[in-house]
Image (tube, rainbow, N blue to C red; front, side, top):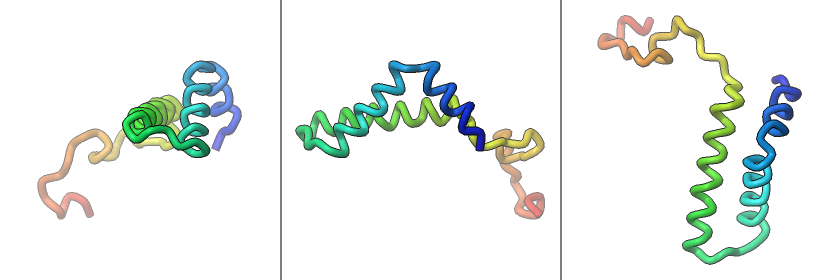
Length: 79
């Protein structure tokens, strides 16, 4: 895993990085009201999905039929 690329991406988006860290810290160490907690959790999930898409840690091979969205109709094609 290339940690330098991860740190470079986090440094390139300081506002989103600080929002993610503060949101995580508040949800972990503080007890906000239930409704506010649900909103913050939704924001945390959205930021996590954004960073996961930006980091793209896993390589998806172009020849993989499932990765390209083409699901085989017969199970024999999977072998």
